[in-house]
Length: 614
Image 1 (spheres, helix red, strand yellow):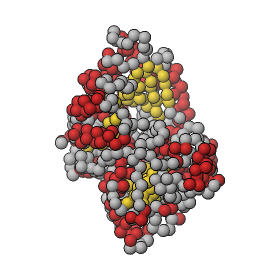
Image 2: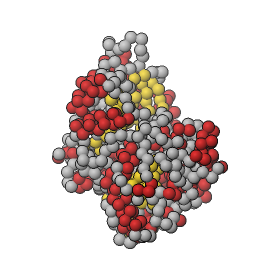
Image 3: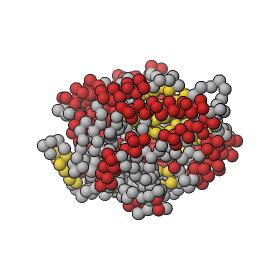
Image 4: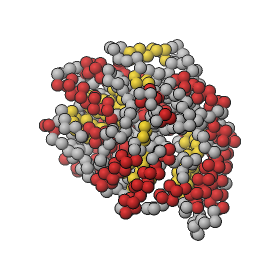
């Protein structure tokens, strides 16, 4: 539990439940019987972190060991940070109340580039040097996993280790190694050199980076026997993979206040903007029987009345209809709602829609991504306007009145006609509702369109593309709003300056480390929160460090340029991504994996097996 000295301050902060611990299913162990203490650090608020499936999995996985104890740590909100700094209270873990200096591993999950300054702030609040080179002792070792570590370079001087790929197996191997090296009194350097030999472990300090005169990367050279290419860790069999049977149930409402069960990893579609789809190849599915058993166990142990079946494209799951058919009897009886995020408009059967009505009706969400067929072909979305409208038609005839559509702006080759097409498609969905003779009386339709700005990401076919500058994105957003002619359509949009910073750090190199530290020392933190993003401090930091941020965002990269992340291997080959980039500019599509194997290269991670040939 939290330190007793902080109790008197909790009335001075928003949501004191963020800082107390003691929730249902939280795990407390006897420290005297533990060899390795692991602090799972989420660099954002409690409400966001407690919604994260990765934290739930690794928390349970580490705590399943008798020799290790995993505890949770979240970034304190600004009011709590002030209390802690004014009263010399170090950042602590929720289960024990112990300061982070008492732990052997501090494991950060990096899901968002704008969490970087929060990592530094959390280390500093704990009284731990932010730079790896200044942490001389073996422990605590500071590690990171998650999507963003596919390009760890901007944070290379702060993390001792990053873990590209799946964490379920490599986490235990890393704990075993640290336990061994801690017992024999080894040095930090000895441990890092040994850890680099584990598949799926990247030690940034063991790689030397040289730059060309034009500021591009010249070379990345491994030292001390580290591998030339770091291959991501890949769990091949999800049915036998560790999965939790219970989650910590939060005291206060969190972002996704429901239980979540993963049904498969990867994506068959190949949308050219989607980093997650390429990073998580090849496709690996759980059996419907395994998924149902996990759903039953978690609902029983948490008391939640909603289950989210989680994946990148839920309606592509082969066993979906069987799974829903088997789950409906007990979920209906127990009044448990089944949520299906990430649906596609081209393969959502009417029968499934009717089945999901059995408990309660939620809004439906689809992602056309672009407003015209031409641009959907450029990004390889492979759905048509008629498929979107047909699905909306089915939904409205089934009693739905709310549909949310996700789009992107700033896509390669985009024109005003494509932006106009977003408004036109939303209007067409509205029109479908009023064509429906069975629409509910007295109810009107609500179509929400959420518009994100493209941030070209590593390991996608768009990794060579320039990113629109913030002022260009603002103009495009305003044009879209001017194209919407009905109150039935509501437009929400992302903050372009947030997308700009995300773009800088997603494709950045090691020289950005000094910018991150400079901005943090100026007071930047919670940069992903609009009310805390301080554009002026960031631009000052770039200037003081002699770094042009638009070098990382606004220029087109050549195919032969050495990219900062080229020494990471996520299975998909660079030659395949180049071909996909070229096809995008020709407006040519690539079939999904189940129709025809495109030879992306990721099958090697499953011993040569991928979804297409299973």
